[in-house]
Amino acid sequence: MTTTLITGGTVVSATGRTPADVLVDGERIVAVLAPGSELLGSDLTGSVDRVVDATGKYVIPGGVDAHTHMEMPFGGTFASDTFETGTRAAAWGGTTTIVDFAVQHPGQNILDQHQLWQEKAAGRCAVDYGFHQILSDVQDDSLTAMDELITEGVTSFKLFTAYKGVFLSDDGQIFRAFQKGAQNGAMMMMHAENGSIIDVLQQQALEAGHTSPQWHGLTRPWQTEAEATHRVIMISHLTGAPLYVVHVSAKQAVEQIAAARDRGMNVFGETCPQYLYLSLEEHLAARSEQWGDFEGAKYVCSTPIRSHHDGHHDAMWQSLRTNDIQMVSTDHCPFCMKEQKELGRDSFAAIPNGMGSVENRMDLMYQGVVDGRITLERWVEITSTTPARMFGMYGRKGVIQPGADADIVVYDPNGHTSIGMGKAHHMNIDYSAWEGFEIDGHVDLVMSRGSVIVDDTGYIGRKGHGSYIKRGLTQYLS
Ligand code: URP
Ligand code: ZN
Ligand code: ZN
Image (cartoon, rainbow, N blue to C red; front, side):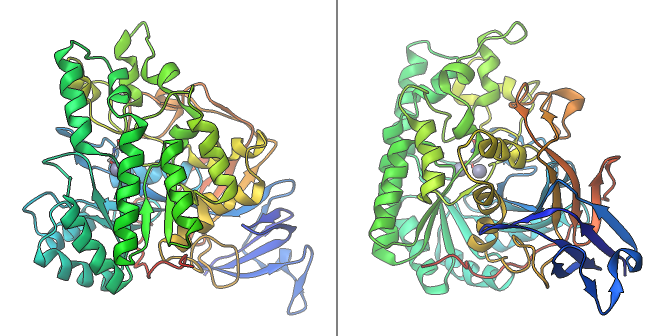
């Protein structure tokens, strides 16, 4: 087994920072030592197989992105990153664990679908991975399937109040699934938007001749998110199941979550970089020489990126500081402009929903530290430690401590990352929503379970290194 000493860096956790050396033996961290320590009387730098000099750099637990959709069938096509390309891009960006969504469409058997997703990922991933299960059709057998999946390490289930005919469950179905979650301890995840109202608004906009991407945002007003968020909070209250609201973008939805938390409920939320940095006016309504007003299709995702006039972006940043929102995931669901987003050339409602960010999340959130939006410790907490706790992986993931998996990122605060398009990123998309973003920091080295998979020569990992994480129940309940 290979031993590695990461020396001279500042180890940053969710609760503090300290100069320390990190000793890795095989796949695990075995010691976090005061600088220059001797272990068993020997000078460590001379006795280990490999020394990584992290002088002047941060040593952080690898990122945990708890919301990705590799190869997801959606919008008449498939998300363009496979488990192979998407997890490799994640590695480049310092994310060493993803939790993806196995998909059940109405009529499909949940356990078969879970198995299918296991097969898609097995032997292909560059970093470790787990699964949530999407439920779109809650029947009696769905409830028993939930129990079975928990024993397989799938301890969280996502339901939708939008996308009629594809994913939407009615309130009774959601209620039944939550009742089961209250019994078996599952984390109930909700895509909270009022899909019925959105469908009417979309129809009316199209009838009025509005076909361009900005209408995606204009037909998903904040009220549709706030209402559905309130509704699922009430279902959580009625059943006692813990609730995790995905991709929160509206200030008023955060207010609903904050109010529930103030009442002492186990209600949690995630936001995504797009809701912190991108806006309806600058992005969804953008024009370019190449795409004209279809440029905005690059930013079509749901919930939508919101107007910069209404305080949503500041509210998101603030909620991250106050812990009204607990973590940041990407909702990585990329589609190329050519042949995929283009499906919606004549109708914004036909543009596949989703954006790609799995490679950029750690950097984008670090820029929040540089800009004074969050602290260094909070960066680690919202990108790694809390996602690990929220989804039952903490101790193994999300922390640098003896016994944890050696998933470690050496991050250079004096480095620089220019996010570009084309070959300048590693996601399988023909554009980058983050093109032109300049980050005052750099992912220098990434270790996954003791193997260096990214260093100054680039990606040196391998397909199939990533293994399935059988998750436990959430460790975040209060
Ligand atoms: O636009 C999005 N968010 N696409 C992925 C599916 C989902 O709702 O998370
Ligand atoms: Zn969703
Ligand atoms: Zn999603």
